[in-house]
Length: 95
Image (tube, rainbow, N blue to C red; front, side, top):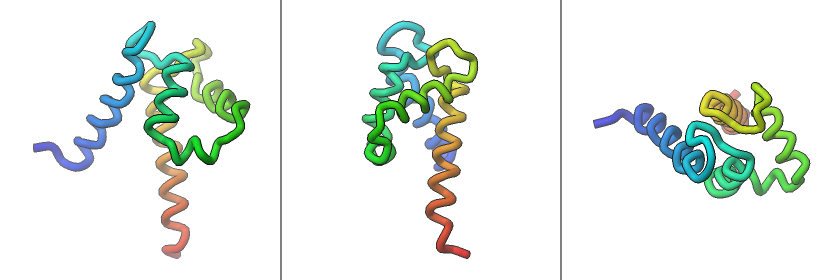
């Protein structure tokens, strides 16, 4: 039986693969695949990012190697950043 953290890690991998396998290189998210992933899997985040230019900017910032795609390492960096921001948001009242 997997621990909560192991299960969460497996879910992140599965979500990445669910979208990356749709077209082209199955180890990378094309812009359209990343956009679908964000809309489907992070609807609350997307709701707050109504500006298309901001979404395009996010994609460009994620693409650290400049290949116009998001590989798993770039995706994990994004998930980590969003998780840190969410953690900070939810712990602000604890101090």
